[in-house]
Length: 478
Image 1 (cartoon, rainbow, N blue to C red):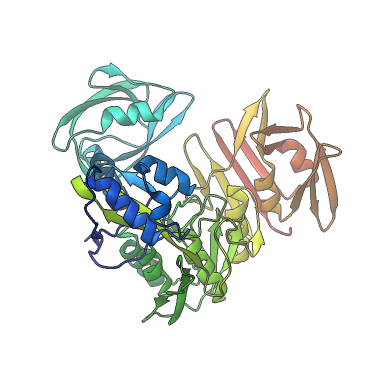
Image 2 (image 1 turned 90 degrees about the vertical axis):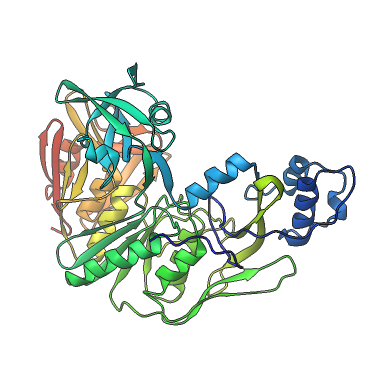
């Protein structure tokens, strides 16, 4: 059952917005629309900057918000507000599938349980070739998505290609709650939970999936909040209760400098090693949870400096069912560390998605890691997560993420700008790999090394290259 936004004072910290609906009284001023009056009074009384109503006089809504230079204070029209409330619940109306894209077009990367897509018999890796008889784009996920979503109860025909044959099914669109919590089990009692967004029911899903891992004998937990833009602070608060008995989740500082801390009460302690995966796209509520677990010494953060979205927003309902999201506070970690425009500093700095997960597995006591790479999936010791492992073939050679390979063998990696080489080092020495066509390729700021060359340097790496299916294995330290 979804936890609905409550109609009482509720603080939220998020990348999308907050979920509180309140209405401030306004003074009727002739010859000015009610919405503008409301926006002026709310900003003049609540915005963290301390700007006054007088300073906002004779300005339109657009001018008032632009003058704040605050990307998180936003005016929503009625239509935008409806879209926003749906996003808080992580709901949309469509067929119930996640889509991806590759050189062959848009494909179904995940089918949600109980969805119209599952009922119609659509399968993972089906390529979308047409929607309602109109050829589907092979280059734009958004174009395909926009054709599939629509009014609840309406029909849509989707043509997919599967193993070289086309299949057309008719679906009835319905509201779909997109999963935001995923869990997996590795060997040695190592559990993995990914939270993609702190929506209103993510805490309940976390409870369920943590309990399932504990029933299997959980000994170490990897908690993944990479690329999580945030969500409700209430949700982060409830998840934090699994790790901290009592204490402060965040300190908040309003326009008057007053601290009104958000507390953790009635919690418990997991009493096992916990590793939080975070990166530069982990923001807001992701930083709330990561910072708190770090401050209470119940988890180590692995990855990169997080986004630095350390502000609290509140949503006010306005005239004509429009709304204003306004920044009312800045927040600090339990130890009063600044987050806004700073972020959370990892305990173990690791760049690259695959390298981050591999490091967490090594920290959890799993030294032997086998990466299986296929067209649309990557598994680590047979377990599929959202973590990829960059690889490609060029001129008959296999190239793979240098950071990922270095992590597998337990080596460090640095960039030497002067020599334009990637230096990979372990206890036995350092190998400088130059940027040359047959050795190392740089794409979008990431390096990919010729796997045969890397194997020469680190013979513990075992590679089986079968074209679309590649296996890379190594035991750290061997």
